[in-house]
Amino acid sequence: MNENAVIQSTNGNITFADITNSFKEIGISSGDTLFIHSCLFSFGRPVGECTKEGFANIFIEAILSVIGSEGTLIVPTFTLSFCKTGFFDSIHSKSEVGLLSEVFRQRNNIVRSSHPIYSVAVMGKDKDYYLSACTTNCSGVGSLFDLIHQKSTVKIMLLGLEVPATTQFHYVEEQAKVPYRHIKNFTGTVDGKPAAVDVYVRNRQVVPTPQIDQSKFRSFFEEHKHLLKKTTLGDGTVMVIEEKDMHQLLWKKMKEDPNYFLNEPYPRAVNSSQQIEGYIYEEINRNSSVIIQPREAPPS
Image 1 (tube, rainbow, N blue to C red):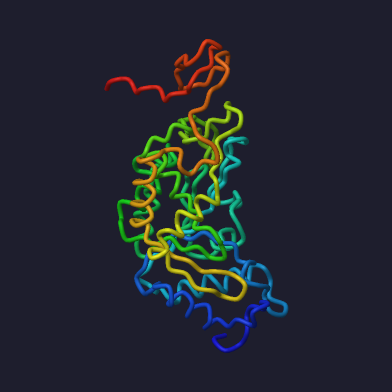
Image 2: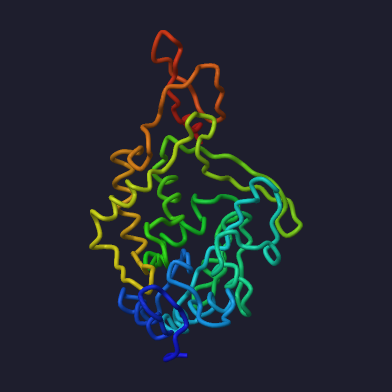
């Protein structure tokens, strides 16, 4: 397996050893804890009659061979559909975030968390720590993303992605209390039992809905590329960044300018007849336009 080509790309064939060497080149090593986002077909196509599942398993095996038995692998198996369906089954609900995550969650000895939206499949030394994450909020205290940050040694690995986008971004947004998001509660069933979860959602009742500007995100990390290690593999890119470094960068920027990553400034003027749950209104002109402001939390 170490000598035969496993991927065909426009930049030549790739072997299993090429994959593991690319991981080592960007600093992945034995004992690491990795939180992974992936788009595998960015690298090329599997050789011969290899199935999609086999293709994903090549990358999974490559990662596990590098981090070893002392490492921990955390793979998102998110199900955003819970917000619409109100249903999640930790055994049978398919991952909605890509091939690698769906294949990984079905492997033997893998345990999946029971968060109805942001579940993860975990394998390795510290799996119990990450599986203990709170299931009643998404990015607040005790959440998976909070545990990842508190551990302070997690590396965020991006397979085949051109922009260093990660769900950890939303954790920083909630910590920084950005004005364009607010808490919304969703209810349903998890593994057959009633469940409720708070989600830090974008304010969709304002037109246009706040959107993250990917070009700003890309430029921001280009300015700090010394913290982002990357290498080319076939037609794609493998990247890694320390979570603590990413958090520090994003936190500092969001506290300086909460709107920095948006494609338009926020808050923005809206019609005063609009009622948005969780917000108060301040009149700013004679036409009764208003600025949306986060409602202050009641004293404890």
